[in-house]
Length: 253
Length: 295
Image 1 (cartoon, rainbow over the protein chains, first blue to last red):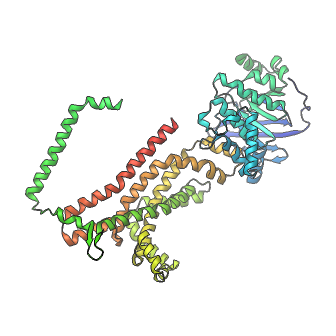
Image 2 (cartoon, rainbow over the protein chains, first blue to last red):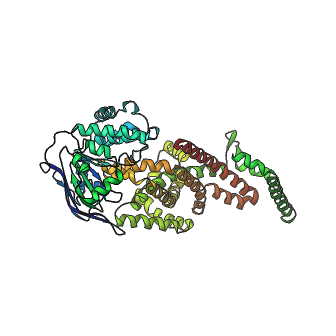
Image 3 (cartoon, chains in turn green, brown):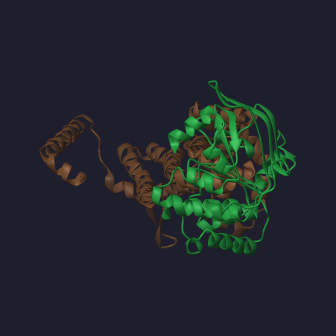
């Protein structure tokens, strides 16, 4: 299901320029890393664990601060300024490996909360949109349950609906299916597939290579905080250019 | 599972019980031959309730009045204590170093000074300055008899309203530090992912704290918080030194005037226990219902 997309560099919504990030240790998580993502593009980031994929994702909405370099999202530079940071976070939705639903709130209130606090919607507006989103992820009848009453796959779908409630321009998926039992991975990938089909800009860190091959417009392979290689789905998997990429793909495929 | 294990050690239990009873018996025997103490249990009960000849009915006497004052003191002190505790816990977990230091200083001061010293400090320095500032004394003087009656029932007699307020303030200032530490522990124990999820949705730090972190904190710290309330009831006895007529104060007065030392203190101890034990049971209940909730 290859969809029509604009050629790279046309209309970047995410522009990452030479970012570096070191954790105390020191562990180099990102080393002079640059990449752009176009509007409506699905970028899948793969690489061995500890290669900086998650750190990259977390830098994109300011959950981690970069040591140097620039991140520009939809024209807004992500810097020290708290207001800009909040503004960017509104435009960027994030789905976590461990769901991170709010356990003290019902499913519907999980989705309502930010709409009301951040988007300042009325109770009715928020409620309607929440139910619409729950319907979209196939959980309309779970609105009044609490997160711990749902299965892992259901929880992750609620988490996706919660992120979508902010009507973000970009969605980040940080190993969204890694904590799930195998039989639940499919339902979450289905929801992500649907989003991609509807033209959502997505940056996806995943180990699901089948999904990566099928849904991605572009694949980036990272190792030791650097971008080793990037390319379009089929070509990337069948004819990787770099030796290191070949080795990695041989290991996991 | 526990029950069957317990039954196995029945021989040891009987032995222990016998040991305790013989020790108690020996102590009682020593007391009876050595103490030369005339027990006057029959006389002590009138200090709980006495018969009022004018009203032709029983009315509460010193000890019951003291118990009620202890109860009022504890209940009123727990609200400002909670506020102070919450405020200081927020300071302590703030991102600003200055606020962290402020919270830290308060908590360390309160936890490392004897409560008795704090009582005197607050009572003689702080409360003496604050009550005139708020105009409480003149407010009390001009109060209507009706309002005076309710003040007496709900808080304290108008004449001792100002010291009662100081006592409440002192207890709150003191217990607030402990509550702050309980809340800080609770705030820090909330999973980091909750902060991240809140931030990722664009909530500010304040909104995240108020809507995501604190509700989970309170759920978690309810048992230790309730435990601190029991401590508050017990600690309220120290305000007897500033002549608040609560249970311990009434006990000392009664002892001085009747010399029924042992009867008085045994009864006072029992009265405290009657107040605190149900609270302990309640906490046990809360903890059990929480445990079954999360299971």
